[in-house]
Amino acid sequence: MRVLLTAFGAGLMVLAAGIGLSLANPETGGNALKPVSAFSEITDESERSAAIFTEAGKVIQHPRCLNCHPAGNRPTQGEDRHPHIPLVLRGAGGFGEVGMQCPTCHQRANVDLAGVPGHPLWHLAPIEMAWQGKSLGEICVQIKDPERNGGMSLEDLIHHMSEDSLVGWGWNPGKGRSPAPGTQEQFGALIKAWVETGAACPDL
Image 1 (spheres, rainbow, N blue to C red):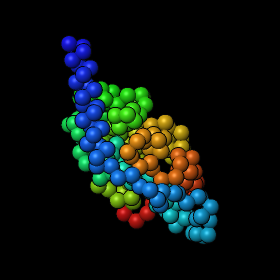
Image 2: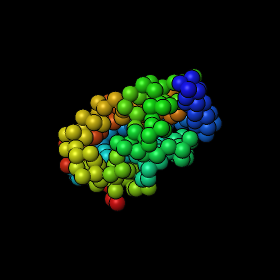
Image 3: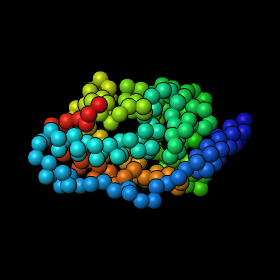
């Protein structure tokens, strides 16, 4: 029985990988982030803050982030954010339903041979942190709300964006997937500057 289950799990990994890789279209250019200094000429602090968040939004609205922040109970995958194949659902804590939990296929690290991404804490963001289908302005307002951001303060957000290793996976997504723009360090610097300039949001 154990051998059959292992084979079944491996088969699912290959199936998911094959579909994910066939639809992937990794970006080859325009994948940079402007540094914080690029916004220094904006004299109005609120406008500068909103402009900085808009730049950070290149990461927030990238498929590597949006795929794990779905509006429903099913994750998406690929550059086109198609529904996850095979069918999996959010489940308790975002780790999937019993019998089809994230670690069934997603291991502690990327498995490039099979094209399956991995991380020790692989799971969906809470439904309160859903970003798909929202404008960047709406996401900005949401991301500042402790009731919709996992109870984080603005200082917590800086730490989360700058140092969290699951967030950092977005820049090391493995074969067949485009990385998020820039680097996690650059992204974290933008978030820090955004907070320090008043955490203003782009228009909704």
